[in-house]
Image (cartoon, rainbow, N blue to C red):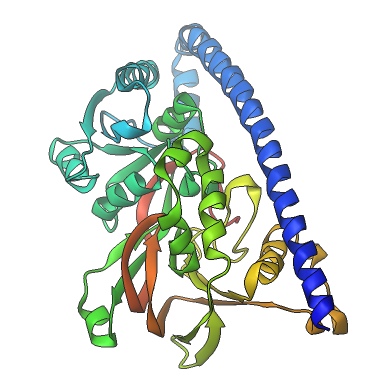
Length: 401
């Protein structure tokens, strides 16, 4: 049996490496196609803007037509007059070009006033979002990665303030899950200006070295996934330079160092009074579940269902990790039956709840939407249903993973 497991381990590692290489190739092709689609969309938008004055002249000549237009526009979101853009300058090669592009698109669509608020190391988003609101912005757009989006949302959540996103980070996971255009600033601006308003859930997390310390700590927001263990290690090991050059694929390189770690004892307490003990390498708390490449890590995690999806995963060595990877990427290939039980080197359990408490005796690194936090032994997480008012492309359905 030892030789069998060794052979399976070697085969699993080889398969995993081949799968990652193929994934990178496919994603490069997808990136090229996205650029082509973006160019077509911009052409279509220019064509629509050129035709708009002609349509207005033809449709506005009689009262009946005006009445029909009013009825047709009853479901259109109110016009935006002041836009505040919280801009992370490290995510754009030419910030002045980006500013001009934003003003052009906003001016062509609404003629709204636009102000920019650049983030800094000392204040990566919260202060700028507050200042935009103080200046009277009725739409605050986060232009940057998931970290910038998270911090802007921490200010707007729980209010009637309207938020938009221009994604320009490594993962852009919230934007991916809500069909906000990627690598297409004009498309994202158009969605923010002329899309539809959706109420989405946000997660709140407390951490600490004991139950009492976690309970008294300040809540931190997450919109995508908060993690505890190997996923936070992976993010911490990822080189920022590689992130800029390779995008989210850099996380694969950073993750190699975390594959061979040891599982720890983890206990989950759910609101129904049940307690669940596991050996785990990572615990993931998901508000949305779609990953880059179209993979769905959490099928039950949607942005408006009022629940967190909790994934507890453990594995032994590279072979065990490859089994977890197979379950996420190609679940139909997961072996079943007696042979599968005899060779199983991993576990993956899923729960759904409005809140959860997680405890372990050994401190683990923590991350929120890709931002690493201090190590902790205790997590307390909850979902805040419909707390964030977000402008998304027309037709977006947040209930779909």
